[in-house]
Length: 413
Image 1: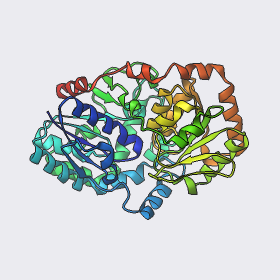
Image 2: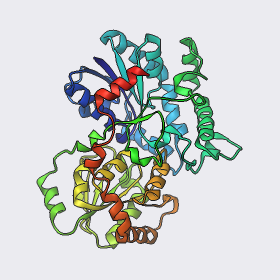
Image 3: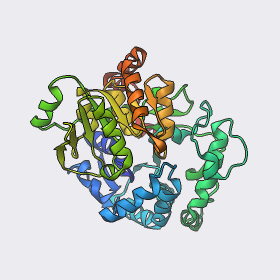
Image 4: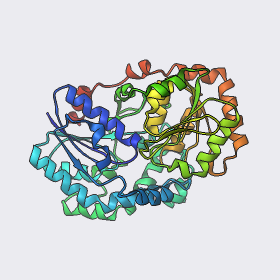
């Protein structure tokens, strides 16, 4: 089968699509990718074609401006929506060309590339949206937990169930995407009932690329992929392995692939707090940095490493609450201290605490003493350690659909 996968965003939003592509290729399917130019290497040489949807960042300066806009401890939907809206027509044209040139039979798409769905509808290509985190489902069994819904959506009513939140967010999202809305109308579809904005009608056969147990109860119509990307563990340099295997397990700090960690007040606060606890510390830098060095206190700073490779040598992960960081932390059976800053991170962090898998602090006014106390409390909590250990990779891999079942699900929708 000739398949198309489209994606854009942080590393956590790219890696599940990478894993899906590899599984499709293993099963003999032809795979074509439309994704960020700087992610081409991650997909490997076996893809049929790779089309750059648009650069994740045009330059280091562009990256700095972007992160400053979206990581001021707010949701950041508007900033990202501007990028999606401005590139909607370009995305639509690229995907249309790929569909026609390669005779695409099926597509997996990310929420960050909505014009792909429009192109698929135009050419009659069945597609499956990959829901990357629980918040994307807006399931009614959960209370709304995003702290700034009302400010972002201009909603004046209390949102007592997530369906109301979903309606408000969808309306706000429509307003943020006028170019995409116009493009949808130009192709002969109603933006208010098009699949991208479908809210009030029942949604069935939804595909989720996150662990089933992050949901508080079973959701009808939701099917989960097996978490096979937790097995993607690049080898570590022998010097890094030597550091990790000597003495006590480390505390791992990772604040995501977008935040400019070395220039961040938050980064400085977190690293100082952990080093003062006299704990062995490993820090993963974001933004594709390749440098590695030791701090004066002996902490190891790594630019080019994966959480899944480092986590087996650690006892705690301090992270931003991005879904890939959470999944890989859980796959290693480790507890977390989350510092959610944007997007789905607030929701993910509160789920971890509710499931007794760690704790979180809203980092807007984070103090070293507060973080140190939270770290010590989580490490000393036997119930949290026991709950975390039950989430090891073997258990995560045993749940959910394999790639052929996911294909069948999409084709049946």
